Amino acid sequence: MAESNVSKGERSLGRRRLPEPAALLGKLPPQAVDLEEAVLGALMLEKDALTAVVDILSPDSFYKDAHKVIYDAILDLFNAGEPIDILTVTNQLRKNGSLELAGGAFYVTDLTTRVSSAANIEYHARIVTEQAMKRNMIKIASDIQREAFEDTTDVFELLDKMEQSLFELSETNIKKNYADMRSIMREAIGELESKKGQKDGLTGVPSGFSALDRVTSGWQKSDLVIIAARPAMGKTAFVLSVLRNAAVDHSRPVAIFSLEMSSLQLVNRLISSEAELDSEKIKKGNLADYEWQQLIHKTSKLSTAPLFVDDTPALSILELRAKCRRLKAQNDIQLIVIDYLQLMSGDSKGGNSGPGNREQEISSISRALKKIAKELNVPVIALSQLSRAVETRGGDKRPQLSDLRESGAIEQDADIVMFLYRPEYYGITEDEDGNSTSGVGEVIIAKHRNGALENVKLRFIGKYTKFTDLELNTPYMAQDALYGSRFPSRAGGSDFDQGNMIRMASKANGPDVGPSTAGDDDFTSGFGGSDPAPF
Image (cartoon, rainbow, N blue to C red):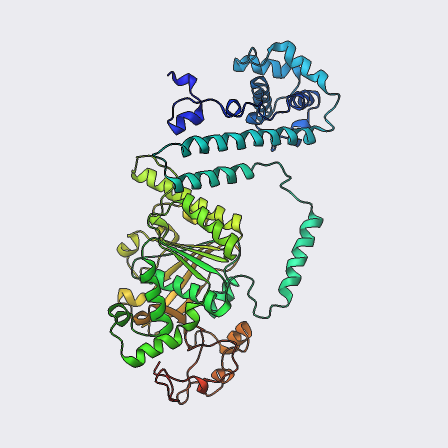
């Protein structure tokens, strides 16, 4: 069959030619030819008419082929800054070699007789666009039906394709995409009033790290956050601590898509962190009786937390988008984490896998993640690898934005770029002030679209695979103002470092710190007695 006789949609499907959707239904496709004529006539009557509809209409919005080429010629004139009238449009059609397809000069002239002015052109254009959307819906349904009959079709891939096609159609610009200052100000004032009662200063999803939350005010809606580091810096441990803090301490529904580790491995890490049991013991199941009781006692809240784990390998953007939409619709998810970005696959199914193509794929993935964050209005955190340039660089080997692996588009698309850095890993035992770096991890905020660039120090506890607030990192009273009175008030007293007092700087540090009014002495061990727990 000749290539020219096969439509673009059929070529992409690789199927034999089948009847058109309208023929299958036995009906004339949705159309508004009279309004198409009125719109084109109005565009040639008034010079400023196109500015009202140029972001609404495209050549494909028109049903008649003649109208498509006429509108295409009008757009050519508009882009060239030329005047638009009967003579210029006719001349442009002649240049494009499509005057005959447009019906000739007489038909172009006749269009101006169908309307007296451009007063209602925007209303007419929206009706034309709506009819085009209906035709596209019919085509999507027909394509899905055609593929569903094929034995070789993957049903889940087909579902993703259908969902994506409908979503792209729903984004068609048939509504105004701007607002006047009065309505925007009203919305902004309303949001400020809703924040007025928040004494903790958090406007987003809390990270659970007081020093970090003071810089970011929590993970903000629609933000794409890139957290990058070299291997063994603790990327997964960091985001698991973040997820745990949001889900357990603040009851925020959160989700992680783990492309590197299985869900069981992630949960074992969470158990080690929550119960404060050595991760090696958890891995081997080598626990004493009291440690089993400690595990059961301290993970009770974790087991009921709204934390969702998906460990689908080589997850594609299509699959991720579909799953995130379902999680948002069914569980009102408020934070999404991807571990990690370079293990995802793009929508392209091409066979080329060269370095240039991979860079383009990573760029498309980062853009898609930003779109998901905006569409669902939730923060999306994506982990990313850094290039080996960090290891070859001299000095303290602190990561830089130029170290982001495979694509500069990651830096461009992200609202926040953070690096995890542990100087101890590189044999650096003291910082510039002479303080020990043992167990210290830094969050380096290298890009912050709506805030300050700062370095935040945290405590990394390797055997529990978790991060917590760093003791004495910030004055305790500031943390009390941030989180309220949920920490024992006496922990910030003047005799903090005396005796056996323990400072509870992070909610992930201590056993079952919550809204309870119980004091420190009320926590008992897993032995069943009244002695303090051995953790």
